[in-house]
Image (cartoon, rainbow, N blue to C red; front, side):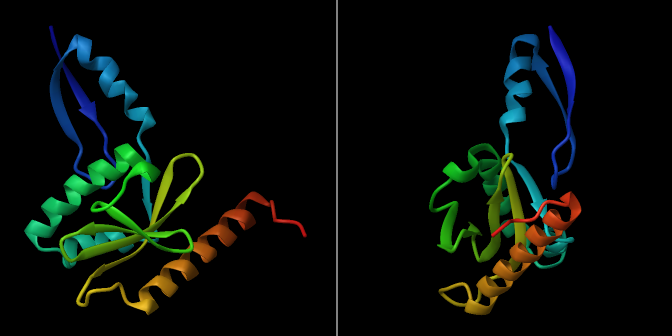
Length: 147
């Protein structure tokens, strides 16, 4: 028979689906999905205020792929820029991110690209935010790297 299931999706609208009982295991496997996190509200503000409806549609589908494939996602969905900073690509939107353990993807900068390349300053900002977040995480845990 059919069951109604509530699915909670970070950064997306929550939704309810109808599915066959035999499909339940497929949905429960979503535990293998990657978790998307953002620096402050960088991505949410960008999505709401700077993205046109067609960019949002593209971002939504690419976010689904990124959540599913994580560090196995490749071009044209995403691309490594440098030093562990990647870009999620959706039309002219670029969301810079990095990977953390436990299947986490951290969005640190989001822009509408106006030139062929992501500006150097944007990549530098992404790296600075990554280092700041990692330092805060170390501070919160009380564990620091030793010499």
